[in-house]
Image 1 (tube, rainbow, N blue to C red):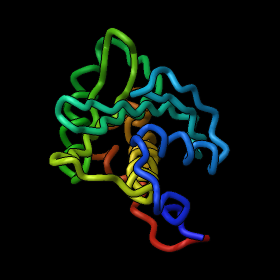
Image 2: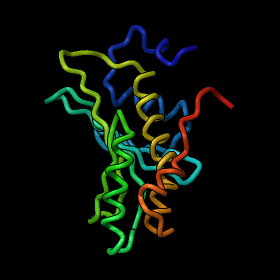
Image 3: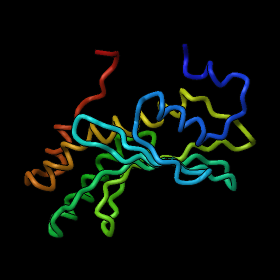
Image 4: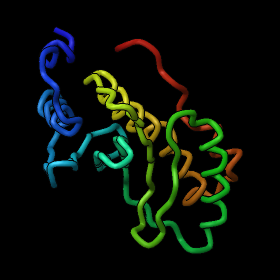
Length: 166
């Protein structure tokens, strides 16, 4: 059964759909508020913290996928240069580093203006793409910050996109 089949006759809030997806995937989650949910998604390299929030004001479903990263102060210029290289390859979403919180952040906003609904498959793909991007570039961040590699060298290790299923 497709993910959307169980929602065919319902007009659910986007965060309700995210909650159902979290249950479906057996992810740990916390419904922080009516318009916000946080969950932990296990990846190959680490567990990612994924938060989605609905803004009815601008009809946008915002997602942030974070993981901890504490680079030495002298490596921040290399990290920022690498972020530019990484973001040049990201067509949906972008990475940034929140120095105060010591978090690497992948952000994306799904605009649903005009009262558009969202399909569970869209949200599932949104979360999957965030985790896939974090997994793909995590080794490059590690090499640049702790391995002493240049951003160009670190980008060579970024895992290529995989197609199909194992």
